[in-house]
Length: 324
Ligand code: UD1
Image 1: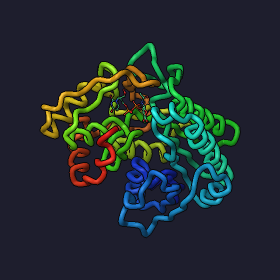
Image 2: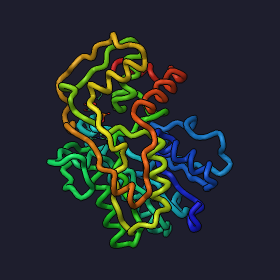
Image 3: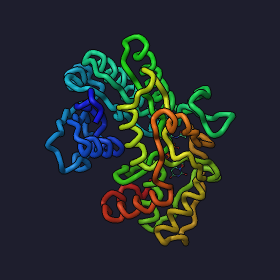
Image 4: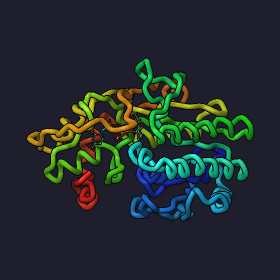
């Protein structure tokens, strides 16, 4: 445990990534605050070991509630967001309000509470299409979707807050995170959607030719990155890619999942390209390796095996995905 950080507030903690971060923080002996509106999170995701856990149930869009909740914490890990490119295309206002105004509320509350470290869950989507691959942090951001704009705007707020209020902020640009507890539904990531469809005997639907690439990152690697970012001795404001640093096409992904699930007979169906989609996403992770000591440990294949096993033991999670 870092000497000056004992109490950590995680926003969006009952959801997918947040709940894994909470588990690890508790295991490492921190007192952990959970700030979640439980709209997409589920208390069942939180660990059984709740002795050092404090629940602040409410919404990050409520500034007064957030200001009170953040008081007394040494660090904030801000995961709460509306996560989906597709949803942001349908309703950019709600994405903006949660992801931008919500982040602003948490940042200002963190300044008022004098927290010593603020870690922000940013996204690979901020890059949009780049001329070079793999994507490095110093490349210009060219967001292609309202979701990507919201993540970049919130990131810029983190940078500005570091400058004008001396809040130490670290932005982690996650690349397509996957793992157990990832949600199902029309707005979930491609991996649970494919597992849900194949599990229900339906072929995966691929948007476009399926040759778009992604750098899929296992959730425990993202958890480790957050703990490193919370304690690392780095400049007062920094941005890091957090990824596996490997690339895979959506066609290959569908093939691997079908093979793990023993349903290679289910030939994918191709639909038109999705609006706002980035063609290629592949991270240069050398900055995080050098400055945070970050090392991705779980390969895509091993991660997929764990996720398939998890979804098979939680079958209720797959029902709603059958039509997505
Ligand atoms: C984007 C971000 C990612 C972020 C996520 C949040 C990029 C490169 N990545 O993910 O960092 O965490 O938003 O939502 O911007 N697809 C199918 N069939 C399906 C579902 C998806 O073919 O049934 C395709 C999509 O068209 C896309 C790929 O799979 O090309 C990945 O989609 P998805 O899992 O939704 O994530 P991104 O939009 O890449």
